[in-house]
Length: 318
Image 1 (cartoon, rainbow, N blue to C red):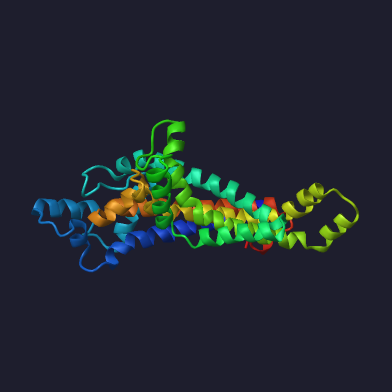
Image 2 (cartoon, rainbow, N blue to C red; image 1 turned 90 degrees about the vertical axis):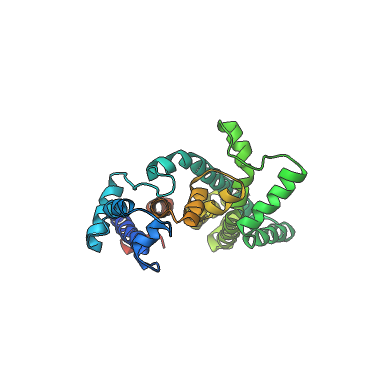
């Protein structure tokens, strides 16, 4: 029962967050300099008929609450409007690009979990020299922005060594893996470094606890103590940080997709911002924020299952 109430609170919080987010995204149009109509037109000279059509489409003659509720109703029914630049439905522009972006995000998430957690566990259990080397590499990775990582990876592995392609997402599973390896590595680099440092700290903290030392002193095999008492107890903070780091990848897709010439949602967002295609920007921002909030909610819901010692009635995972 307590778990159900906890899940219900998290889902209600998710709904409230998305509602506030949708209001902020929609209202951002009216905070820009000039009128919403001039922003939507984008400085172009248009006919009175076009002005009338834009006003009717965006309900600019109606009060702001009415416009927001009308837009929200359209979004809930999967209608994001029409692109002012491409003259197509926003959903039709976004949906073909979602596949490449999701594949890139999943690839980067797998790299973060495999590389970050493995390196962190190795650093937490290794001798000082190995620990120092892994920590130093993690520090460098944490300080490297994704656009710098993209440039370095392209220069070394695509131009000099010529192991991977520079542009495009490929077709088919194997070809996509080959094309998206460098973008996924650039996107995941700082996340891997962060998860490595947090995992190392969690392992070292659990390794130094009294019950672990007692287990070693009683002659229990090292692999049993590490698996049952160290890794299991360190799993909660590792899972939380990994989930939040993976959610944060969503914001980095725009930079990486632009750097590698990928025709994904992130690159479409960059193009739409430069072209002042407001309907597309609105829809992509809402989708990205929704994905971020959903991942955080899933982490919150899984946290009590990972660490049953938590009090569900006290409010959750943090």
